[in-house]
Image (cartoon, rainbow over all chains, first blue to last red; front, side, top):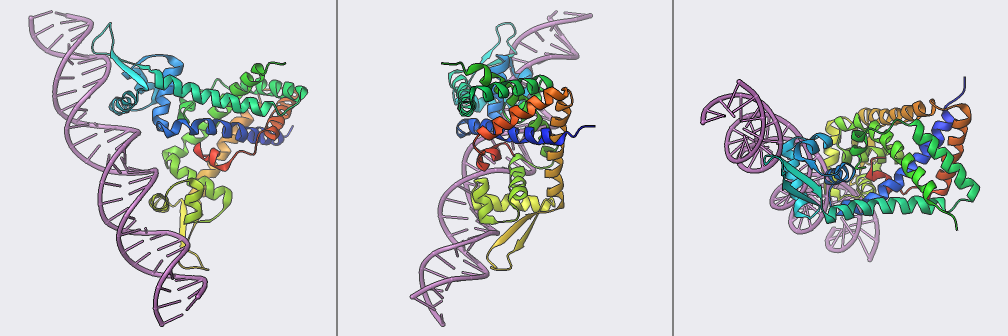
Length: 153
Length: 153
DNA sequence: TGCAACAGTTGTCTATAGCCAATCTTTCGG
DNA sequence: CCGAAAGATTGGCTATAGACAACTGTTGCA
């Protein structure tokens, strides 16, 4: 029977580092929108335009709550809000320019930080990181979208 | 000139997986306290008892905001609040039982998820993950506490 | 001893988030 | 073509967070 602790420890340490990078990438965005609002943007970025109902379901809030949140996002130019062609009682929310830019900016920052970290390593080390990260990512369950949303991914 | 993208991609994927694990570990706690309140608990867990002023500074909020937040945490039995022996104008906040339990529970869940992920790998693969994670953790700047707090780490 | 600086709290205000119930419009089925 | 169901919004309420200004009590120093 082997001991899991050393690996788990190393992974927890690396997770702290990675999460520090994730967190830092979010800081800028959180000066413009709240975490809850950012979560809406992330859903739209990954799933494309959505009906209010789907969106509320995806984000996990009451439809009436989403109405107000979307109201603020529209006011900020982050999302667009239009009546569906097919059915006039449905309302479709989509990412607008500011929203797209915000999400892309966060991703770019995150990626830059990761890249900067990797650049401190030698080629061999970098290859080892690649292998380790790929294995971990594969072994992990596909992270439930709902889980990630908690933290605005 | 080499291409950084593959490594950065893999690392971003792994970060999503890890972040999913972090988020899931937080879900339970967020049924009891808000993310902001949890951040206070995390600071206390990592730095030990603090003065109100230090704590407000660490969490990055106005002292008056912290007064109210601490009020709620005391009411929930998460933290203790007592006047400093040395100076009666200072107030020391410390983790109480419920607070300690909450933070430990989150950490335990997180660790369990990581461990479960690693258990799906062979010994060799696990060793490769260990190596990769350690290299990345070393190369990363020590994550600024302030950054981690954004996500309640 | 007396005053200035320090540490926190309290009062007041604004913004966001969250829910439920009620309402309005639209769509769909009989 | 009429009533029920669907989709979203509005009104009303509570809780949290956040800031600033004003205030209270405590230290420390001159």
